[in-house]
Length: 116
Image (tube, rainbow, N blue to C red; front, side, top):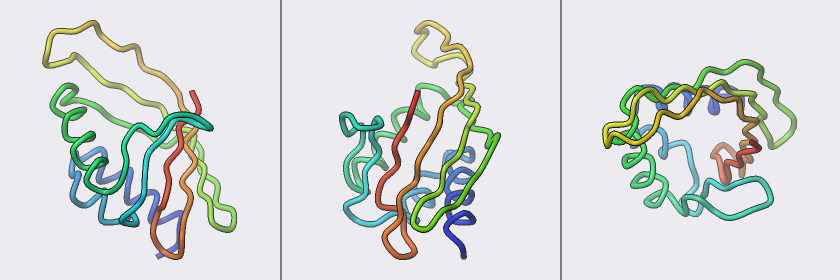
């Protein structure tokens, strides 16, 4: 599977809210972070639990790949994200676009960075 196919499979798992499949494409020490900023979810377990909490809050959460590009050990997506109503009654999050950089070590994703 190419790195682009792997990143697309991660988005498919994300949209299915299948956290186990999502993290299966990641290295043990992988993380999700804001671009050049704070780590949001650390390691496979941190990513698994963080995404599970997000999906519980936004059960209609969805990311659409608008543009995709692969280069060496990186995949870059422009994604359009919709969250839908929050299960906790918090304010609706307006749909937004985000640039996401997937970094790879070998066949697995080692870092996901969000530019928003």
